[in-house]
Image (tube, rainbow, N blue to C red):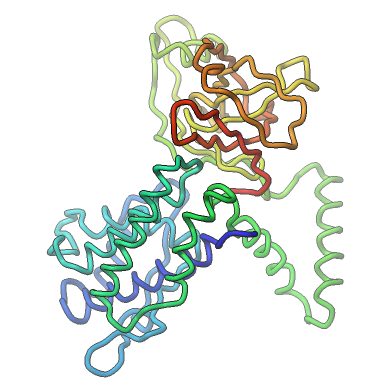
Length: 378
């Protein structure tokens, strides 16, 4: 059974809906700020490099119905990716003093309800879950929906019943972000742009023909499109470092032949998008082939990720666990990993060919680690 889709239920559904309701009350009823002031804050906010949000429109959040109530189809005009960005930075955006916080009373029930929504949504973005975490998630969903019913009576949506299935879906099929539609919708955007220049008489022939021509041209020219490129999703800005800077950084300084006393400008990267998957520093597990033996895959964990001058370097911590069939999920007893002292190697991102895993821990210390091969993007 396929689980509920995190993208459509939350990013394209409940998060947009509740945000529009909350902004309506803050702007029209509480009169804490105006739409123009909110847009100015969005424009001046320090978003991660390469990210920004469009302005919000009055007709989406200020138009209401009788008795000063918001519309039942209220929403904000964000894409799913933009909604996720706003949700993750909404607390800093709306409560930051620049010069004054937009949310004037952080004990307001509507604000508490929004924070409760973020509590369970952020957990849903996890790459792995324990049994205790699933129980905690279920309680957070119930808590938010109880608060929502009190704050917005009469605004219940069917998707609120659907999100209650996430805890059981996780037990059956793993983290929701491994099943969501984000990467499929991103690919749909490619074909939508192809169709914009057509007469729509034969959409399937147009898309297939254009995609074949486009792919052949890129193969011929050696200049591929950016679909599937490795990108940095989260990290620090580049700063100069000198020895000693840690074992991994010191080895990179040696690799780059930085003289003693010299420095190099590097950034610590937290999350990258590579080969259709998000990879987190010091968290993501992979199956990787040791250099010189491409047919033998071994369990490894991503360590530090360093960026310098557009190049990415990965630290791989190797464990003595060989896997012959890389298409199947597998179990590893806890004592097998706990009894090892892993070794590490440095790898440039262009030489990184891995199978990304999700590690699911059991409910007790005796339960083995369950490694799930990620078969979808995200």
